[in-house]
Image (cartoon, rainbow, N blue to C red; front, side, top):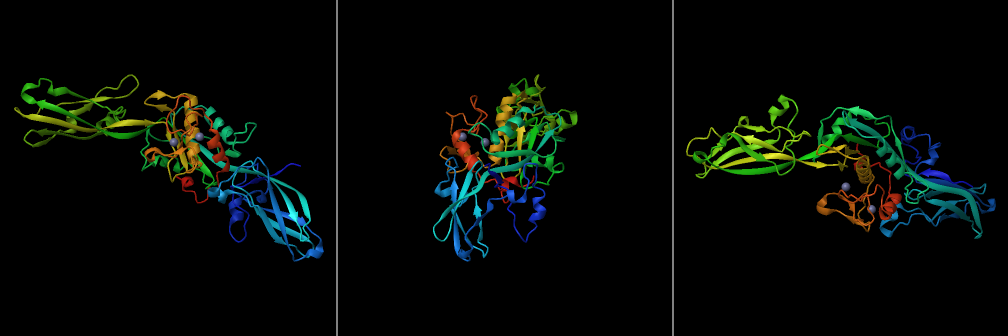
Length: 427
Ligand SMILES: [Zn+2]
Ligand SMILES: [Zn+2]
């Protein structure tokens, strides 16, 4: 007989709260009954009515192919047995807690008070379900292939490394307003602001958002010192200064934006005597962009310095450190870039980033996994270079767009009840 599918990450049927209200938001056409949600299932067994008021035991028989939970992961494991009182009509109802994993199968045996064992016909198989929404900042170009790959990679299928996570897209893709280069600085992650007002909150907290943007970069501080001897330096009207940390940050496209010089933090002249002279922003201007639109240098006009001045001109400015994507802690969205440093990314590399960030959002890579590492606190990643795992922490030319077998096992067991999970907090 076929197994009944149980969506273990979704809320249980409970009494005395507003769960009836909550549950109506959780239905998609795959879930037919409220009893199909949550880790707790109810199994009925019939005994000889003479045994009424005795305690009967239900033995849970896991399939040999089920996920294996270690001692530290015990909270996610299924119950081994359950007990219930036999009613006067000989019936007993057992509440059984299934595992957090996907693709786990269970059968049951009832033991009566005389030690007679009865195999029950009930069979259950576990699944997880999450919703996602898709946004694009206007002007961003991303093909649909990456999202299709994401759905397939998390779902179950013929491939034994699939994860029994059904991802259901909520609504259709929406375009939102936002800048051409999104600021990916970790503390702010204000990127969520671009989707806040367009989001559908109906499936919260079982929904995350995917935001495709044109480019993502962080401003990084750069410095340059330039020795100046006014009497002997003929080219003071056009001192060229080059960025060593990528293109200048936020140069702007219109004259008004360019006038703001967001990339310039500070400029001053320090004389050998210790006297400090301010260099006005008006004396500094970004050079023309290259053919791709990047600006790597600026010029300063110091010709107005008094005769006889000797010392150093100091410039503090911002370069751009490009990133392919991120999954902010404490926010229910991921962000993926279509281009990096003005170069278009291939669909395969965009897919790799989408999978990597979605992996993070769902809880990868758990501390305790044998291949886990977290270099300089830059995120929980998988050391599996040989396996070409997509949870490896850096761009990796050979990186496949699949999870390695070690990550795959973690993902299969992962508790995706996202209530109380800060990483699913609406942006
Ligand atoms: Zn990462
Ligand atoms: Zn891995």
